[in-house]
Each structure stands twice: as C-alpha cells, then as structure tokens.
Length: 415
Image (cartoon, rainbow, N blue to C red; front, side):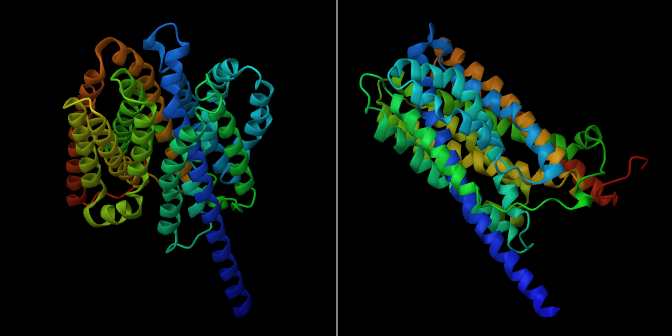
C-alpha cells in the first residue's frame, strides 16, 4: 500500500512537471503571437484606415475579444477543469484561411486584421488560464515554481514575437507584414501540438459548487482595491504599448526600432516574474502593487521627456516592469478575497473587468495619438495611477482596522 501510494505521488509529480514544461512552451508561443499583433497592428491599421485616428481599431478588436473570452473559460474550468483544446479547435478551423488568400497579400492583411484578430484574441484570452492550469495537480510546495515557470514563457515570447516580425516583414514586398501573419498561424499550430500532451485534472467536487454570490465578494474593500489596481495597471500599460509603434513611426523612427522596443517591453513584463512572488511574500502585495503603479507613472514621465528611440525604449521597459509588479500584486490581492470554491468565477470576473477596460483604452489610444500626440498618451497615465494608489491606501487601512478588531477572514453573510 505504501509503495503504491509513493509510486502514485512520484507519477503525479512527474506529470505536473511535464505539464509545466508544455504550458511554459505554449505560453511562449501564444505570447509570441500576441507580440506580432501588438508590433504590427497599429502600423498596418494606419495604412488601411481612412483616418489615422482609427489605426488602433485592430488592436482594440483584439482586446475586446480577450474581454469577451475571459468569462467562458472560467465557467468551463469550474465545471470540467482547465481548458486545453478549446481555443485550438476554433484556431485550427481557421488556420487554412490565410493560405487561400496567398495570391492577394493586401487582402490577406486586411482579412487578418478584421477577421483573424478577434478569433486570435479568444486564443489569447484562454491562454490566461495556463498559469492556473500549471498549479492544478501540483504539490503545494511546487505550485509557486510551476506558476513562475509558465510566466517565464513570456520572456521567450518577448524575444520570439518581434523577431518573427523582423524576419518576415519584408519577405513579400511590397506587402509589409503579410508573411508575418502566415507564420503566426503556423506558430499557433505548433502550440496546439505542444498542448496536446497536457494532462489537466478535473477539479474536486467541493470546488465545483457552493460559495458566496459574486456580488457579495465584489463588495469587499480588498476586492475593489485589487480589481481597480488591475484595471489601472493593465489598461494603462496597454494604452502606451498600443500607441508606441505608431508613435515611433510618426516620429521618424524605423519599424526595427519599434520591434526592438516591443521586444524588450515584453521581456520586462515577464522577466521579474521569477522573483515577484518572493517580493510579495516579504513586503506584502499592497506595497508591491503601489511600487508597480509608481513605476508605470515613471515610464510615462520618461515618455514625456523626449521622442528619441532611447526615450521610447526606456518608457516601454520601465512600463513593463511596473506592469509586472502592479498586475501580479493585484492578482495576489484577488486571491485573498475568495474561498477555493469561488476562485474560478472571481478570477474570471476580475479578468473581465481588466480586459473590458483595456478595450476602452485601446479604442481611445488612436484618437488621442492622432489628435493630441504622444505626450497626451503619457499624460493620461497619471490620474488613474493616483486613483489606484488612493483606493489601495484606503483598503489597506480598512484591512488593518478589521485585523485589530479581529474580524473573520471570510465573514458569513449574516455577520
């Protein structure tokens, strides 16, 4: 009996490590595809749109798709376990469509922006569950490492995605980026093959039912602060990142310059993940969130100080690090607001708020950039950051006060 149990534990640990490797690779490939979208979307959109203020519409469609795709995976995960192949079924049926348009590269680019991007965004939305899928089935001691390794896949994505654009953007002259989207479809097929071997366990029955109503959870000061800080962190980062490639082009810089900036921005977004969890454990999530928001404001300040390539690169890198601290810290705060049985609906609702607000920022970025310039993009960052810091301070004060009065961690509705 003991030998059988030990063998089962060893087998489970081996499977968990195998899952982590595959999910990290899939995260890298998915992130690389996202990098292609962000590096090219506004530039190509500017060539297709009747007005430059509409240049970021393709990226806005991408973000809208991500917002729409956050709630269904949460419900599916709650009932059946982490989704593994849902997004690839949609993706596979559409993977051959660009091939039918190869004789018309201009039509290919337009089709990718108007039709492929919304489906690609659903693919990106489901990939948000990879880090949680890595933790499922892993031992308690291995879970932090599992999440870290999957997040680390984003570092590789930051290198691979812009390089894909750099290697392929001129292959099909005079149609810039046409071949980049063809390669993107192939990358997604590779990701599908990698994920085919993931063994995601079905959640325990206790985690599939019960829990408090979502509205009751969302009224907690800690959840309000966590969600608001996430809503500030991710959309403000996305606002600047979405606008940066087109702004660099408007300032006379090259596509290679913008590719380099996006590449290191994504590396900066995910690189700190190796130690962000340790910092949160040592200093607490609220302090890390506050530091991250201040870094985002610092990045915007750098953006206001000049329009050279170095200014753009520094803005994007500092912004990426700030996003990591503030968004990962805000996610850690969300985890403190729910019970195990409530995790899927709460996390999905939080992501819906974040990506829904990102969509608003994406649609606004083109108008801001076209009518008011790069400086206006950076100025917009400051008021939300100040609001986030203020709400975070109020929630932290309320938590300390509740702790001094020994209020239960998750009070019953009648208390």
